[in-house]
Length: 609
Image (cartoon, rainbow, N blue to C red; front, side, top):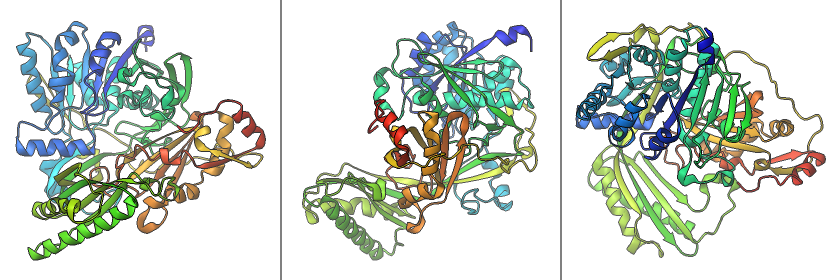
């Protein structure tokens, strides 16, 4: 690369972690970001189903309307004035529809901005073909579903780069890999090639850090007391260099925190194996990434490595799976939890009687989640005998009528069952969405790009046949030379973050100091972690746990399998997004030597975060 390219720094602002993220991020980043690009991540398995249902009701819908009304539309003049480029996966299942609406808005404002959109990810027209090919769910091995709501492959970043190369000011996509909204601009700006895997991994890491908005600037941080001014939390800016170096920061005079801890937590968020994080364009090794606090609220990120990509895209299908009623009943008084259990059983029984009287089938699921007695913590709950409970009652039924029977009948508890039952806090009857995840051959998908009304096919992505297997690696984090004898809570030694991924969740544990890491490894064996989360396992058994190492980050990452049955759309748990699963690990006992324990005690360690 030439010297000019070597000196160039591309500043990318991450404005949203979801389609419902704050309305304040964009004006903040426009005012204080001095940006080249502003990126938006709108999509997840749950949102694809929402957009699919929207389009089923109205063929012109199916995209993120907040892109027009909240995040971008109100700021088009400022975006044009700053010559800022926009990249967003807000197209949902209808990128062309969003592009058309946006072009109309731009014209009405008297502006001249070029909108491009990427397609090719939507697989709904191929449903029969895919079912006949006997694709199976990558987690459950279940067959291809019926009653499809959405069906999309996760495209990569090169179509976005192609759009920018054709002069697009705003690039709209459907389903792409989340991090592609940042990698695409970096490919375009720095001229990175398909086979420059280390650089593609670094750009993917930049996207991974920025795609969840304020999660990297102190949002959801373990040490939450250290994060100032949540109300004005700064949204992230990535200063990206052509050699793959990234500096994460935020606008001046904003709240939040950019530290080694906040950045490390986000790096390991939902990555499963940090040495083999697979996206469309590259297989990423983040296990030896290095973080350096170079100034307050500025962290330098280096060391990402890449391997050739696989020959498949990940694909996600959402489908109709019956109906679900959820009701929230407060129960107040002595023995509240015991009353809640009895009342739920009685209400389920009563509703089943009504189903039989109408010749309707039984419920496919009934569940009662007690909110307020730490039921999510299993054997490690510290609260019992509480006198306030919210009973989350869930029933699933093949028909709306059957779900509605319970929705009506559960109101009878307030006068005919437990003393202390108060007014229902909310009841919903909604279509239930299933999720089916599989791998589809890249050579079967042709991405397309439309700019100024002209549509053209883009090259099919390549990959390495047989590259699906994880690379072999050794254990690099040593066990303690001297075994520990003094137990302390894990939170005193580490930061932790968790998140869902289909039917499983990830928990990352990052040592606050390298000296703590051997003791964390000794304590947090796969067996010990599985036992800690036993209450999430199938049939009362510990879930299957995989443990991975990230030595560069002084970290361990755990994948807890089959613990979120049905994934975020289907799980009945209080925390189907697994945002709180790491919190359940903070009091895990870790044994230290007496010398390290004494040093820890003298350093005002974090308590109770």
